[in-house]
Image (cartoon, rainbow, N blue to C red; front, side, top):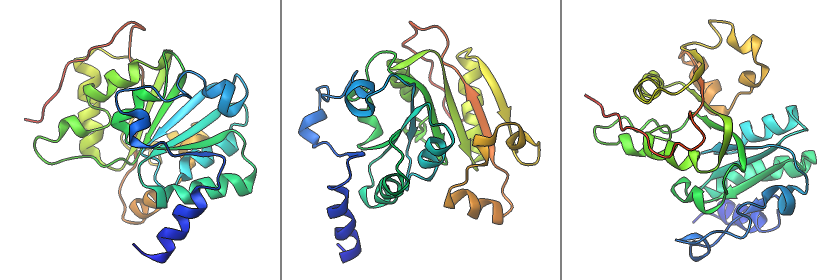
Length: 237
């Protein structure tokens, strides 16, 4: 392991806005902050938004800076990447921004019923290989996880350069009869980013994709009835 990565891991331990539980703390058990993020971590009653697969935390920090009346948590497993987001939020004094280092498969161990108001998924690995549908963060298996902690009327936001993931998610929405508020195949070409300023927040990945001429897609949808817990799988042809 390189010295720079070791330095970042060591500095991560000093950040008050970064939670790094041990595997034994969450495997088949609830983490102590589950259901208590507002009271014990943010110490306010503001709505909570998650960014899943946050990488360096650019979107989490951008959302937090633009929305001081809401709380934001970036979730990822890569500690060296999250170092950047935790450090930037600390330097900016963003008390409404936090980070959680864990696998998204364990997300139910951290958030209780109706604890989260909104979920953002920005430029995730589209998992395009045959048979990888279950790994996609908008697959029905993951939507079932989100449904267990998303508030009624809460939204899922998918922003990606992958037209394949965009179209797959549209199919999941259609097959499961989910309410879709916004569907755009090109947020800049269609002018949607001018209507919704949060869409103008750019990660390093997005800047690169735009330089390559790739359109950026966006979906905003809900999970339907509050008591819904099962969704129909959609498989690639």
